[in-house]
Amino acid sequence: MKGKFIVIEGLEGAGKTTSSYIVASLLRKYGINNIICTREPGGTPLAEKLRTIITNDITQKEHITHYTELLILYAARIQLVENVIKPALMRGTWVIGDRHTLSSQAYQGGGRGINHDFILHLQQEIMGNFIPDLTLYLDVTPEISLQRTKKRGQLDRIEKESLYFFTCVRNYYLTLVQTSNNIKTVDASQSQEKVTHNIKKIIQQWLQHVHL
Ligand SMILES: Nc1ncnc2c1ncn2[C@@H]1O[C@H](COP(=O)(O)OP(=O)(O)OP(=O)(O)O)[C@@H](O)[C@H]1O
Ligand SMILES: [Mg+2]
Image (cartoon, rainbow, N blue to C red; front, side, top):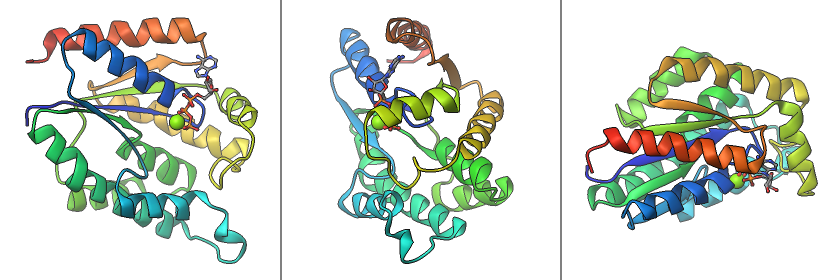
């Protein structure tokens, strides 16, 4: 595969969307112009439909079980990986992903309490050894996360979860980031300028070791 897959992870409002623009513009400065941005869940017609099921509050009528949630998220992910991400990488396009597998491990594992090994097993069966080349984890406290999302107005089904839920998700993220050298943590509770500076530093350092 010729392109590279860079993923941005973190709680709601951590700054993932903002950061994906920063990464894209930095890559362009290095002459990397073939870039696409993806978001999860979503990014294909079917995956976008699955996103609305996950985020919309249809659950007043029917409770979505934790396993249903997990399976919907992996269904959306594999549609995106097979139909968009892998073909893009094969033709030399770089992919900046707004969320990926770490989100499922943190939210459905840490937040919902689904067994970690079960999630990894499911992932291995569905996705094999496909992993991002680099993941930036934007770390914010649940309090900051909720503050930023509330400013935006209407909260979706996941955003309405409790502070305790997001505390569990964040703690899990903090454990997961220690498991791989390809995951870099950014303190995203800092000012936008400092966050931008740190992201640029990480990407620049990483690019020095990447075969372009
Ligand atoms: N470092 C920062 N300091 C202050 N505000 C920030 C910072 N980073 C992002 N924001 C603001 O917080 C809000 C959320 O940022 P953004 O949409 O990039 O986050 P996100 O992680 O993509 O959120 P979501 O998970 O909901 O998509 C925006 O209003 C953005 O301007
Ligand atoms: Mg976003």
